[in-house]
Length: 442
Image (cartoon, helix red, strand yellow):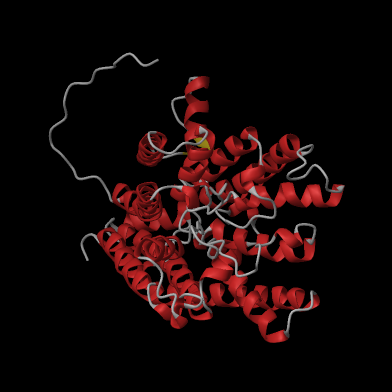
């Protein structure tokens, strides 16, 4: 395929279409076979898009609105969408690299730790193996915890499996009545969910490199270093911000003990990486917390992962570019390596595109949705970054607003991957070079 990145938008449209048809069936809705009928087209479309794009935003109550069949459909949509994102993004990187000369490929593999082009089948097998093994371990852990709370073993196993998949693919749907609010002080339940979100959110290239060279951190690629250190730093910053702004908020952390407050701050910060689960209602959080959370969601997780956003590497690369300009350095350097100018331009293009999409959607929604701007922005960025956190505003929007959110979810998931792939293709050579000029900047 000359342009493999063009297949991604179509594949997602087909997946969303199939999911919509399945969720619109009466058997997918609780009480649908006894007279309620199937879900309305907008509800089915919104939920299918949210599941297949591993977002987690909802406009109906997932535990009570959907039947067991509907829950299975959600699980499959999220699993297929999540694995498809990881394998698709990884394989596009392989196919793009194949267009380089052998010498360039060897240099790329040496400097950037790229995957072997001749081992695509084994790469896919490893993606599936890591995904299924991780989800299985998390499912057993969570099932034992739910069983500890008194659920029947079969029900505990189902909830454990469902939440393990939703954590690893960063979808954030929950089949528990009331979500996770009843377990907001349970570290043993929150830890596996956070582990799943982090593993799915750092990206398969990072997991592969850690698997191969976990004993040699000095030899890790810049991508892995930026992703890991960036994730850690942003998580700690987010946790500190939540604790600072919500410490005395009686609707969230105000009445909790120290252990619950620390867990609440850490859990919310991790979930802004694109996880979507919540121990405390984001709608009860203050404007300061919503703004910080919006920024963290927009940054998102690692490249070639189930997480959304502009990605941590993009954000940090832009930071290094700005720092080099402030210092007056000719080259942008990260971890004693020069950052390729082409990569810098790609980072700028991805970031500006994301800001443009979010700004346009925010402007349109603000014209007819009556709510504080920070709440509208929170919902838009959550949709674009496929984070799934919500203040409850999306469910209250008119149909036109929910259609915009659907479009933003699709563009945020598919558009960024496709754009990054297109930008990564080697630039065509042009024999014409125009005279250089330096416009005034700033």
